[in-house]
Length: 315
Ligand SMILES: C[S@@+](CC[C@H](N)C(=O)[O-])C[C@H]1O[C@@H](n2cnc3c(N)ncnc32)[C@H](O)[C@@H]1O
Image (cartoon, rainbow, N blue to C red; front, top):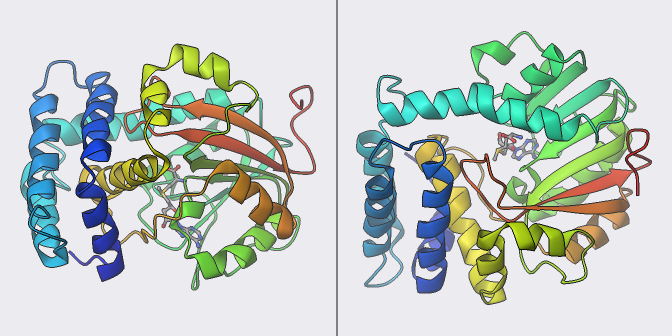
């Protein structure tokens, strides 16, 4: 397994933040317990995080961390072994349950019928959208698409800021959990490319330090104890918790260790400024939070950008 030194240092710093670590023990277990009611998932999460934290207890040590992560992927999560109970449930979640839940959420937000799934990952959502009658384009810098998604048009980006499709190729671009994986210098070009390819751009991001006056936040907070606990943490601790959740979900649980992890999380106001400066004004922010039905819960928001929303749903 190869992980960039800078990434290892960021994860190491997050593991040394006791409050962030304690929050992530709880939030990961809350997510997993919805899907693994009869397996020893609590113990698995606690042991994995304890081992990772122990590797940094004496000081930041990227090589120790890499060794532990490598062992966890191979021995604890048994990456690639479909007969292991964790991977059986995880695969069904990724290919059936998560796409079904996301499809329900998206049909009211997507404008038009031509959709670009930008940073499509395994392609599970693109496939569900195609089954739902949308014409779907996909792209990513990596290619780890499930067989179910391989019939869809796909461009593997040769460079992170390349524009994969001509201007106007889609009516809506979906950019779900992607932008914090893009290196900061590439972001302006990526955003400008998105604004050219689709009139509506739906961006889902893990974020922190949510503004108290965000429309809909009070209702979301009332339903989500995890979101209340998260927002009660100091700002920097919230950021470190996002780092640990991102690392756990992508590298340990999913086993995609080659994913770029610059942990580019930003508060909503910073996204609004950056997106608007590059031709993608944010029209609306929808707080989603630590949603039920998601295995790896995080402080999610939708940023609805560009010219418009599906009929009847714009604020
Ligand atoms: C956390 S995964 C999310 C995948 C999928 N959108 C989902 O919601 O499950 C982030 C994805 O963004 C991709 N990615 C990172 N940088 C990118 C870039 N510059 N352009 C396109 N995709 C990128 C990664 O390879 C990865 O597949």
